[in-house]
Image (cartoon, rainbow, N blue to C red; front, top):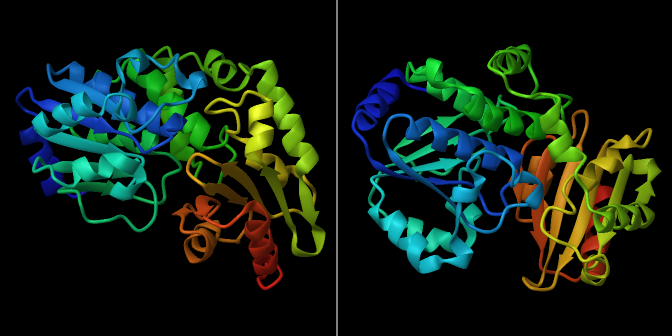
Length: 334
């Protein structure tokens, strides 16, 4: 981050302000961890921060400190719009394009307060007055740790803020096995553990807290998996009917896509999830090695993300989407 931007932000944060903090739509562990970590940090300096999520976040993240204070835009548009309009600063974390907040975009586009972006995705839009954007980081939470230290306030990071930051680092690093995990990632985590962050409890809260229905849905997803061995590719499909039959709730499909990479010889995988409410197929892509799923998603499925983890969508039927995907896979080198 530029030194002049850091100085400007120190000045902006010198006196208490009304501050809105926004994660992307369908927030994951990194989005919720970073926004709530920033929330607790700003509270220490007598600011009035409010986290406004575009829509509901998964239940397995509801234990994160401060999650009970989060406003949900889709559930209370009038009040949330008022809060946004009155905010003196707007932080956007873990996304870099306003369309990632869904309906809330229309409100954000009209705001005159300065935006501050903290994000690790590729090709950021230019809406923010201050940008801490770096694709070399595995998580926005790792960047938030640095951001607080850039401000000269590293001593403010305590067990509560550290728990939020640790959650995002753990989830977005794939439990420290994704390529963005560095020695510095582990040094930050070591510091957080020294602050009292419960590194044995948090993984259990995140990954060992499934409902019976979610495990049944996982079983169905694995039954649906198809493999294209000659192209080192696998994919999973889940229809709306299948989701309904297992009483699907938000977060139940989180992480299922990664199972496709656990097959020997598979370097590229995807999951296609039908959403009848929005009349689209939601897609997650994962890869290991050199195949760039971010570019693949951008080129073919109106999406994007990271080199080895990205998302997209299709407005075709499930059958037409799968046909398109299989056809593309035969024409590329993986």
